[in-house]
Length: 519
Image (cartoon, rainbow, N blue to C red; front, top):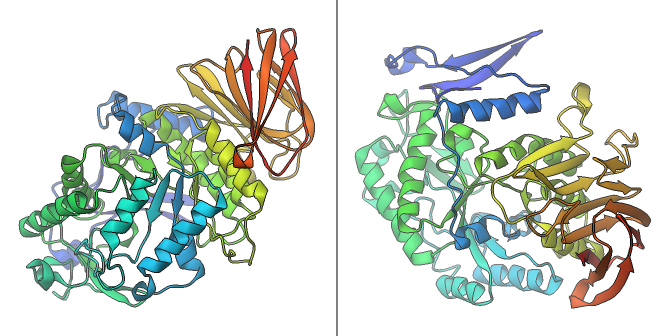
């Protein structure tokens, strides 16, 4: 793994059976010699590559290249960080809306249908297309005449508020007191212009002091005016290669350019609101100072494999839990893959949904079981931002590699959550027990709802996926069982047992989760 962000474009080049790290400098175009040639690596080892990556993260900390997040998060920041989200992007995509067609009424309608669905997400995120022009960080006053009142109304109903923004895009530099020289330039000396749908924009050159001043001011005004709890930070993948364009200050070229942008923009926003949560798609631990929450977005190129690709991405992002950065599940663009995605996400963070309630890309709408499972799994989400996630029954070679059918979450050396499937993704059965804690013939998630491990906890929750029994070892002698169903319905019962509790599940699409209070 990298020991530093290099002053150039870093990539891996594969030829035949060989692989090489390549640093693209293009000194021929930019007539710039870096401060030094090359860059440093750490080479780490482990029982498998998951453990080797874990070692890499640990060594980055040991060598003081990075520091983990502050464990003393404010209650507000922790609540936003781990809250389940609903995001408008899935509906915007389903409707194929160009930027100029998203309106206040459409967002209100999305919010209304989300509430009507019964899905208990706690953060409502307004995605792309609410802005007038990229770069100004202001809403379109014609399409959103009462935008600030809408945000206040969403908050007043008990939701955290999230906003999407691509902070480094700029459609009209003159509106900000800048000109085209303040954008990234091609080697022909012209600004680089990009396009998305009907929008045309350049990229701010964040290495220039005047641009930095403008962006800091805009970022702070944006936070003061709209007061978001969460920012879905979009952009990094649009940074051009040095083959295409470069900043004025080449000391911040290549991989360092995103860091400079984050330093300027995220730094300014967090000065204004230290509790602000920044969510991003990047995995690099070298940028841990700027990101709070990882997102596996966007799965748009994974049609038919949303669930498998999410599992693979979480297989790697789950390691960030040891740095204090959970993973938010997001979702694909169909309801069919939703439950598997949420199942795979819960051991590493929080739940999310991009889904369209009017019908997804296949015309499907959510069933009662979709809503029940989202709510039930959310009831089991752990309340800590620091944890270890371990893949269970994973394969390490071939196309089966990089996928985990099951997961274990560990906090302070204690197993506090297990997400167990009965079969691997190739259809082969997996062992029906784990660590002498649980024996089960069905797919399920079990989590402690206190700070103890599952086997000694006085309060656990279970989300079952099938009709079968499971046995959980526990030192207590009796328990109250509460079945939580949609619409707040509950069914209580009482069990007496010795050393282990046996639970028989009958699947009901309204069942959210089963609460067990040991006595």
